[in-house]
Image 1 (cartoon, rainbow, N blue to C red):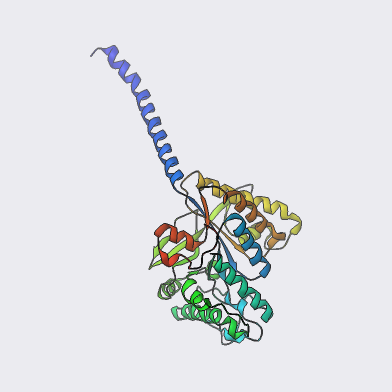
Image 2: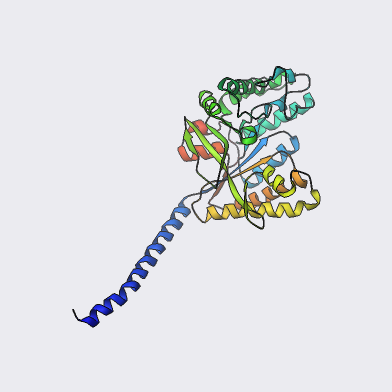
Length: 344
C-alpha cells in the first residue's frame, strides 16, 4: 500500500466513525420514539384527606369531563362526629384524639359517605390515609395494625354508627375488599408499616418520595410508589410534586390569595414540564398529589384542572388511579375496582 493511500484511509477514518456514531445515535432515537409511541403515558392524580364535600364534587366532575380516574386517600375521622369520635383511639394515646378534627355533624358524614360511594361506582380508587393523621414513623407493627383495623371498622360501620339510613348493599364488600391502597400522613414511614401493609393485604403504598419519576417497585407483595421531585419556579429548584409542598415553597405555608394567579402559573408550568419530559422520553408515570384544601386561593387546584384538561385528552395518555395502573401493568384483577363506571 502506498504512503498516499494509507494517509487517505487514515484521513477518512474519523469521518467513517462520525457517520457510524451518528447513524447509531439516530437509530437509538428512532427506537426510543417507537418505544414511546407504543407505551401509553400514564398520569396518576391523587387526593389526601378527602374531606370537603365541595372538593369531592369538583374532582368527580373533572374526572367525568376528562374521562379520568383518581385515587382518594381517606382519613377515617371524617366519618366520625363529636358524638361518635370516641370510636377511634390513636396509637400511643389513652383517649380519642385527631390531628385533623372530625366531621361536624351527622349530615356532613352522610354527604361524605354518598360522595365516597358515588366515586367508587364511577371507578375511582378509594384508599386509606389512616385515621387521625399522625406521624407513624415511631409506631410498632401492632400500632400500624391497630390503625388499619380501626380504619376498616370505622369506615365499614359509618352508616349505622352515625344513625344514617341507606347503606348500599355492597358497602361492606367495598370496605373489606376494595380499599387496598395506602398513603402515610406526612409521607412518614418505617419498616413496621411495610410489614403491616403486607399482612393486611394491601396492594400498594404511595408514601415514597423519589429524586425524579420512577417506576413502582414490589416489596413483600406490596407495590411502592413514590411522588417525584420536579423542577419548579424561575430557578427550577426541585420540590415534591404535591400541592402542600408548593404552598410552603411559594408562601411559607401562609395564605396569599392576592398572588394566586402567579402561583397557579408556576404550578401549571411545573406540572406540564414534568409531563413533557416523560411524554417525549421514557414515559415513566407522572404522579401528582393534592389535598382537599384550596391553598393560596385555589391556585394548585386551578393548575391541576388546566393541566389535566390539556394532557388527559391526548390519545396516548391515560389518566388513571394507582389501582388502574397496577391492573393495566400486571393484568391483576385484584387491582381492578369491581364497580367501574366511566373513565379509562
